[in-house]
Image 1 (spheres, rainbow, N blue to C red):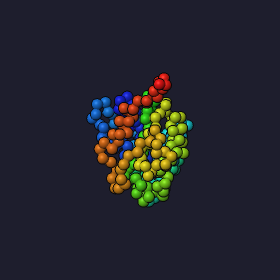
Image 2 (tube, rainbow, N blue to C red):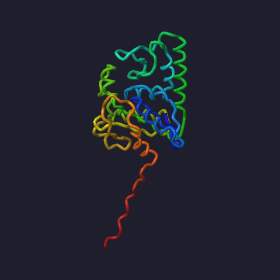
Image 3 (cartoon, rainbow, N blue to C red):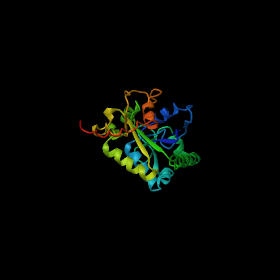
Image 4 (cartoon, one colour):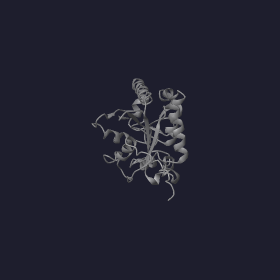
Length: 234
């Protein structure tokens, strides 16, 4: 999560890349980087949608603090929540959380804190969804039962996320960051889609400055050009 130029940027999926890119701005004038609920996890578009829908209903905290909702996913061994399918806690110690009451209680306190920070009312909220992370496709294919097609950006998925976000935040602005081949053809020219070139591979941070075109387009939007009235016929 990033605060910059009187804007609040929140990562809403699919992976850690957006938060790594936000961290690269740490030290810039006015840039404040902090952790949000979804920054360091992997989640499918369906999971992003479900989280927003549950938050709109006031049920997300209950989902994330109910012990019986949790289990260890195969083959990844990652912590998952059955109330939020497709949401993988990629950097949590699943065995410790599920075997020790004190550790689970501490995890629940962390969830409450991150929910409060992420969904705290703020003006100028920008939500960033991205399936761009280089190793995301191979991770999904080898560490989860899901197929990569479930992570591609489609018109229906984008519209559902926009609608759900509007129920949670006050006039949020959505941004979808991806490669052209991981985006449906009818979304390529959409104004809230940011197409970047980054090959698939084993990396997960992306090069420093990868998101510069995204942040620059948000912070310094091009002024709309008004049509010039036609002059008198000569």
